[in-house]
Amino acid sequence: MTTTAPPTGPVATNPKIRTVSRASEMPKRRGGRFPAWVPPIIVFIVILAIWYFVSYVVLDPARSFLVPAPHVIIEQAFLDPKTLGDIMGALARSAGVALTGLAIAIVIGFLWAVAMSQARWIERSLFPYAVILQCIPILALVPLIGFWFGFDFPARVIVCVMISLFPIVSNTLFGLQSVDRGQRELFQLQKASRWTVLQKLEFPAALPAIFAGMRISAGLAVVGAIVGDFFFRRGEPGLGSLISNYQSRVQGPELFAAIIVASLFGVVVFLVFGWLGKLAVGRWYDYSK
Amino acid sequence: MTLTTDPPAETTTTELLHFSDVAMTFPNGTTALSGVDLTVKKGEFVTVVGPSGCGKSTLLRIASGLTPATAGQTNVATKRIGYVFQDATLLPWRTVQANVELLAELNGIPKKTRVAEAAKAIELVGLAGFEKHLPKTLSGGMRMRASLARSLTLDPELFLFDEPFGALDEITRERLNDELIKLFTEQQFAGLFITHSVSEAVYLSTRVVVMSGRPGKIVETFDVPFAYPRDPEIRFTPEFAELAGEVSHALRLGHS
Image (cartoon, rainbow over all chains, first blue to last red; front, side):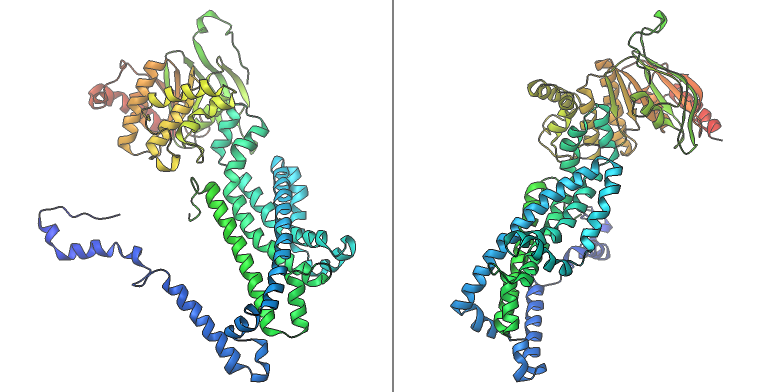
């Protein structure tokens, strides 16, 4: 809100009043005097500095391969055609697993939540399993999944689905149940069927929460794809197998390069789903609320 | 709830709503209403005033069929019931036009007809030009207008209002009161209006019903003699002040 002083009278010419009205604008400029992109760059530089410090000062030169300096990672891994090729190939395979797993998790999670939103007893019977699924130490289960379903693509996808399912289930359910009571009664007064209420009221109302859940799950699906692959180490190698190999061969720069690529991929998927959510509901829903 | 389309006696042919000895006790044992007798006839605008939590809203919920009464007779002689909630309850992802079309859409009315009906209702409440706006870009008063328009598409015979203007500022509220009176005289619906504002009650209605605090009972009924359309200036006449004073007095007695 801007305070406009009247054009005449002592108030307009009183410098103290002017100062007050300026002060009310202060919160807007809380960012300080430099542009918005400056602080993130400074933080990034600080992190790089700490990285170099650890690599060259803290670690003994003989052990510096444990935390190779950034330029070493770039030179030895990213600029090495063989390594870069391996990493990119593995990325493509892991991406296939992650996206397939995520798609399946979205479908199952959505249907699961819709079923639970239809009746209290269904929710009471099914929700505990969603929580349990979330709490299972997945690492312990991964080898078993390999034995049950083989060590190929399907087993990897299953690990992915298990890891990324819960946020979809819980967010979708929360979204479906968050419908305003008045809006619900509006439909009830017109004797709208359950299906109509779901389709025209609950589903649109739940979309912001569904997209928030998908964004979280997208990151988890990437983790799931890598974890499965890391343990199976058979079949077509993805980023997990690659990381595992680099680890056992103590190839520090290559290992860090693979980890960086895996993380960046997770970030990209997260951002894409954030963007999709904005595209779908940004017109009427304000995520910053 | 019993829904009678043919009222038994000929004297009641114009009765759209008839409650006799209606009571409402919630499962937790709270009695919200007891022994309520209330009639709303065609051409009437009845306002119920009472303290917060006296069961006024429950009365409307029973009338609309949202909640069944736990005792007594409730007869509602029409299926064309408009209901305006305390909040505008617009769907935030729909434009004004799509929101106003909603009820017709839920009733399976073909697209062409409902578009025309919605356009007419939007025009009536003075929202023409805002059809493509989303609720978040409208003021509170405009949202309430959209909500009114939405119910108007049902062409209601009985219009239920649950403190619709309670959250609005005084100026907007008075303007909407005037427009509501205009709609009432033009559209020929019977109104049952809930409010806690005595002045709003007297200004709008043909009859003011005063309710006591929990359990809600009707303590007194006042006929309002002013003719429609009402001049906003009648609020400053001695007659208005006197009637409002009597209503306030009854309200205070019922509250203590």
